Amino acid sequence: MNLLTLPNSQSLTTSIRATAQVFEDAKSLALLARIQKIAPSDANVLIIGETGTGKELIARHVHDLSRRREKPFVAVNCGAFSETLVESELFGHEKGAFTGAFSAKTGWFEAANGGTIFLDEIGDLPLSIQVKLLRVLQEREVVRLGARKPTPIDVRLVAATNVRLEEAVLAGHFREDLFYRLRVAHLEIPTLRDRPGDILPLAEYFVSEYRRRLGYGKVDIDEDATRKLLAHSWPGNIRELENAIHHALLICKGNRLRSEDLQLSSIQLHRVRQEHDGNSSVDPLQQALHQLFETGHDALYDHIEDTLVRTAYHYCHNNQVQTARLLGVSRNIVRARLIKMGAISALK
Image 1 (cartoon, rainbow, N blue to C red):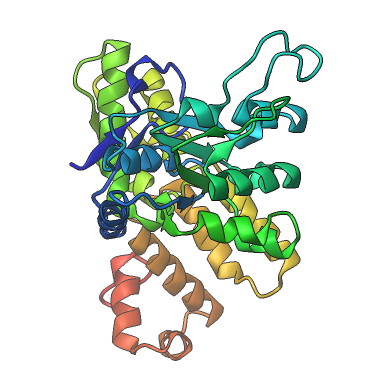
Image 2: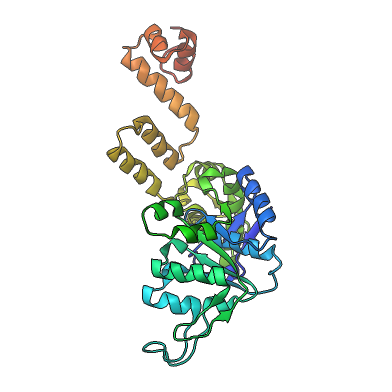
């Protein structure tokens, strides 16, 4: 299995981000091939993906495949600092540059010199800092707050965002020139629901990881739980899957993880309902199917077909010919299904 994990994933007690990434699904393998082409260059990289898809893991892999692999990798969350502190954090400051600056401080760009700096959620940067970041990328030097002399740097920038920066540019929230400077090379990480081939390998990895931390023996995922995992939409992506497996292991009995142990999010279902409330084009049947998918119903296909035929049969006042005409199938198909579900006798 092509597996990536955070360097300190063993020491993490809770998941605050995606701590593992696999490349088993066809879409993930295509992403891996693209990473392998882009990484050896020194081009800036923009990683686009929803929260919890493993953007930092991809950034680290880009670094590990580059000529800078022996140099620092510095990860910075742009949304973690206030507007007044972000400039000092990124570019550093001199002693006395502002109230409370009792000593000089090296910024993250200087700390990453020779290596790679990863700016997560770069769309959260204030416009005033975007201007200075653009200058750093163009001039390859930083000027600390309170300093007059620039400091040369040799840093590769890998940035990540969970929003479409093109839309932020159109809205006036992100500089167009910086956008093009960042997007020399770009990587789009598919959501977990769009790469179902990765769901079970990731689930098995997290089962192995957390049962070891909890001191459990071997734990298997039963068939119903497997179907439930594959049917879920995973709005929180890998991070949600990891937390769901962790919780399930805490409450499961014996050495088997069952469907009822998986407490899955209903956020995606709520999103569908909200879209339906504000958009009359959303199909109510699609809503109903989303609800069924969330429940992880056993033998789902048979359940849907039985319900469809039974409901149509009752609607047609138990007339098989009318039911067949309504559904657009032959009477023999309707009759066979009604017999199978016990709605009519085979002798009728």
